[in-house]
Length: 151
Image (cartoon, rainbow, N blue to C red; front, top):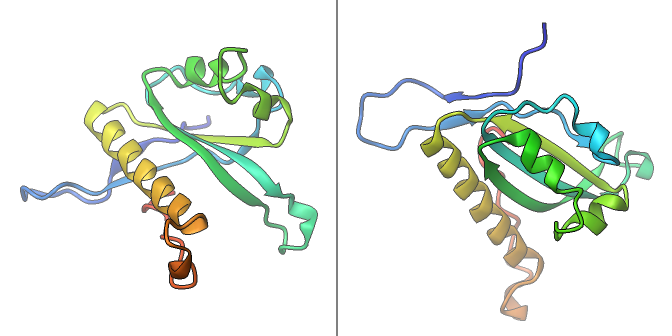
């Protein structure tokens, strides 16, 4: 029996400090058609959309290079990911191109879901600044930030 990717606290804490959250992500999967989503659960969670920049066969030791496009949270992963294929989706053209991959983590707790998505959005914004710095002279100084724990 397969288990769904889930979120769980990294370690129990009795302090008033924010608790660390570890997300158990699904593997990346290519989303060529909505049939790719048949095994996505109808549960709350967060998901990531990435576009393949360099395929696995590009000589990176069997690894592909992905450009993160979007992080989002939802009350129903299956429904939200299915909507990516509709003409109303701003990502529909990119996804129809067959170069996008998805991954998700089930996060039932609403506060944990908000916190995880906020941390991922912050990372995405910081990474975008690294790629296109607002000050050209600072480009050499910038290093991409590390991903949040669990990603």
